[in-house]
View 1: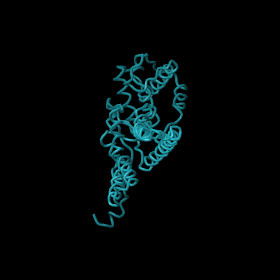
View 2 (view 1 turned 90 degrees about the vertical axis):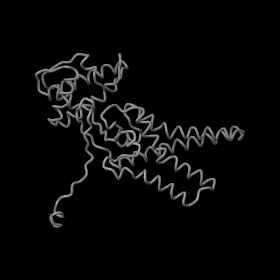
View 3 (view 1 turned 90 degrees about the horizontal axis):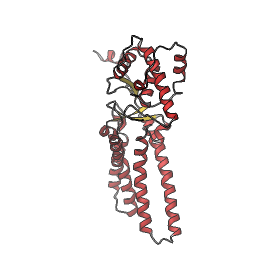
View 4 (view 1 turned 135 degrees about the horizontal axis):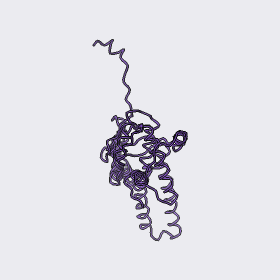
Length: 294
């Protein structure tokens, strides 16, 4: 093939669409967060942390003033402990929650998911966030205190900032936009754009005659996470995915009615949503299929 022919060929743009295979073998199509969205989320989280640190510092200054600087060492140690806990547990706490996202990620409509399609585990969240210490916080903290004490040379400063820059820009140099922490923890950061929870889907189903009903036991196998994924499948309306998801749910609840897959999923979606909302009124939240509630 000559150069002119190659020049005329359209360039294939990299896509952020990925297929997430669930433990049931169902492929769910997700869109990875772009590097820009991840950077924006981190900046928002950084501003929140800075605001908290400023407030913590003001409290420390107030403590110095109230105690007449009688215990400067103790106050400094408490400040350092709170600073360490804040920058570590802020990310871990929020990403371990049901939304799997910090405030910055929520603002950018992102969330963390497991790349193997299973449940996002606590160990994965801890691993990806401990790596942030190695990537960003420890080098910058060392350089900051070292510069204040005067024992950091110019070359050490350059090396420290270069180390941090490599990890900060790492998502730009791999197709899945992964941080080093994502590689170790086996996670993705994906778009989590939310619409009104199934209003139009409920309205569409309500206009049809009732096709099938489900028992409480058949609805108890899934939770809110699976409901959201099912809603995404119904909105996408891809026949192959519809058939795959319907087969997976039929197998899970051992229900093999002779009924159209789309009609089956519509009915199951409405029934599952109603069941979860009913239980929520009694304070029983089933986050996903792994949760066991009475």
